[in-house]
Image 1 (tube, rainbow, N blue to C red):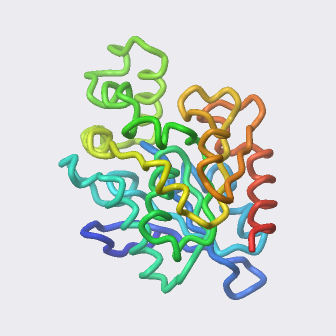
Image 2 (cartoon, rainbow, N blue to C red):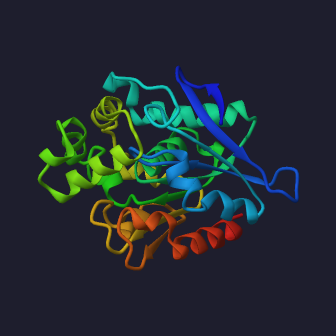
Length: 255
């Protein structure tokens, strides 16, 4: 992996190019809470799928995650700061504008990036996040409980156990994730979403009981559209074939 210093954070990233051409149109991938660029985008074959489609794929570990710098103050994890990390990476790579796809918390970061720097985002793909972007203030409270519990065995609800088991499987720093869960508590007002003119795809599994309604969120964007991924829950939707096909079609159809 490569490294650079973003907005007061050291960040690890990859920059993958299509094999048959020098560059290809860039797409920036932003992973979800307790995940990494590899878990979200490499292992489910997203990087392979996109590079084979002729795209230059840039993906990074969010602050507090993977190989990027860890912080233990919740103030370090405001969604806008994490969005500025993404913007700094585009600056570092001298990418003027890119398509941006985020999943779950990464979709929230993508929306904040589009709001703060609309000219840098050619299109936005919001996976695993629907109306909760505007209906609430960030990550669900059971995530914080899951990160701060003394053990997986001490947790009693399925969602708490799911998030804790996932964090342990990705060998995450639980204290850093707890700080992130406390700090990433911001949503976007629907009037700000209505001011975003780029194409937006909202993609959520039909069995996802975490993300919120995709159709309700898509309606806030002037050029928004929704995709319901059949039978997929919050975790399984990430690598779903229907999701991948729809994203490739969306990228090819946007101006």
